Amino acid sequence: MHSPEFLREASAAEDTAHPERNIVGFVGDDDRTRQLAEQVMATLPECPYGVITTARNAECIKYIGNAFLYTKLVFMNIAHEFTESAGADWETVRTTVGKDSRIGLGHTHVVQDSGRGAGGHCFIKDFEALIEFYAQHAHDEIGLETLKALRRKNDHLLVDSSKDLDLLHGVYGENIPL
Image (cartoon, rainbow, N blue to C red; front, side, top):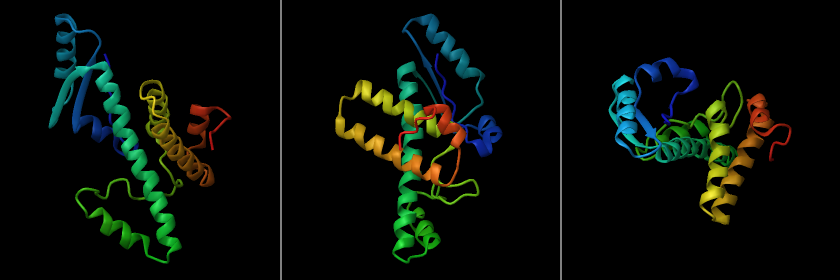
């Protein structure tokens, strides 16, 4: 079984008690496995959306969701850099862009006390896992290079601001792919 969690480090207890969605992925396609998956789903807190699906779907849901937010953070860091370089006010730009319902304000705060970039336990490891998964299954060199470029930009942001270096080393060892 694979039941990905979607906890934010700053609000993990609240996210656990009140999830936005529950996903239970199972291996195999027999009645017993499905019953076990339904039992797991029944033990999870109520939420607006839940799905029982294959373990592979659950894995993709986890990686894609975190990779999207990772990408949004990396892009917002790039936007911050060119906004400030152009002499514009980042807070005004960020807030106004974030008021677009298609974009939202979540993951637009790029300057934090702990540094810059998409850090934390899940973003770094899940984005690396997505790159490996993509390389193994997609066979698209341009897409792979795009993902690697996003990773390099984020790793630079983390290293330059000394944010989550222990997590980077935990994923890459001493060979951070800058």
